[in-house]
Structures are given as C-alpha cells and as structure tokens.
Image 1 (cartoon, one colour):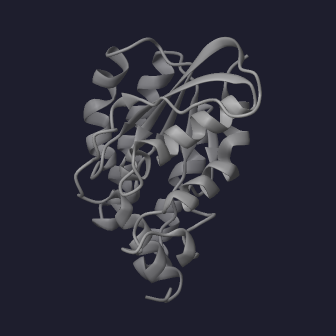
Image 2 (image 1 turned 30 degrees about the horizontal axis):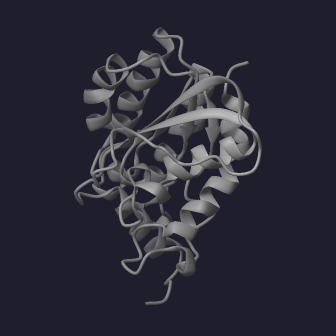
Length: 226
C-alpha cells in the first residue's frame, strides 16, 4: 500500500496511538544493553510516559522507543535507565488519570518524556480539552520539580484550518509556559516514509523507531539536568 499524502499518512501514523492492547513490556523498566562507550556517572532515571508509540506495539520490548533510547544514551556513556510507561490507546485524559499513580510508584525520575495527543486527534477531541489535560500533566510534574521533554504532535490539514491552528499551538505554548524542552513533531522522521512503517501503515517498524531515536536522542540528553 503506497503513501497517499500527508493527511492519510499522518492519520494512519496517529493510529499507532489507538486501541490495540499494550504489549507486556509496557509499564516496566527496559534492560537494553550498553553498546560502545563505557557507561559512567550516577544513574539517570527517565520516565517515558505516553501511548502505543512508546509501548512498542509490533516491535517488541527490546525495539520500543524507550528501550532503543536507553541503548542510545548508554552508547554515549550516559548511565540511563528508561522506564517504559507507554499504554496503547491512551488519550491525554487517560494520561492525566494515571500520571500521579505512575510517579508515586517509583523513585523520582530525573526526566519525564511526555508523548500524548495522537489519540485525541484520531478521535476528534476538542483541542481545548487536549490542552487542559496536557496542562494538568505538566503542572503535576512542575509541582514535583521534575524536568520534562514534551513530544509534540501536529494535526493533518484535512481536519480544517481552525482545528489545526488550535491543536498545533498547544505544544509550543505549554512547553514555553512550563519550561519544558520541546520536540515539535515526534513522528517527523517517519510519518511519510512507508519503508519505516509496519505493514499496517500505522506503527513505526524497528528501523523507524531507531530513526526517531536518532532524531531525538540529542534533545533527550540535553534535557537531563546536570
């Protein structure tokens, strides 16, 4: 099946945030091995909080974004431990419902990566609601003094100019308001490249996940506090 352009491909890519059951790897710490560099320094705990794009649907635990990210950071000598808290089907409302539980369930992370909003797009949820949910998540993290890396999403043009403007403005506005580091569009490296997507044309394949990791690992490393 060939890519039919931005609206279709992005809508399909956003379906990666859909209702498929999360793989068993979700909500557990990944154990990706170190690669080249000698790992040193204190352990840096990173919480990857998102939907199926973090959960690793279709690629397995060892090839999920959190696992490949951990390996990439450790390859640079960073003693990173990335906990995968990706749940397939999560909207921003679902994320808000569980953020406190996840944070209370373990040691305070050095960094939280927030990746939510694709399901809101897929279901046509009002950008006003999406904004309020993400705002509440970021406020919870701010009150706990936890740095945040916010993975942005973008609405496809076929949703209409008004919707697109309202939705696309959410991530830069909130990142600025709450002092979060921003990746403007998490799926930017893969959304229009069918060779980096699985056969369902919804989820990045293992190579696609690796491509996203390569495009974002610098920002993750820079977002870690000294």
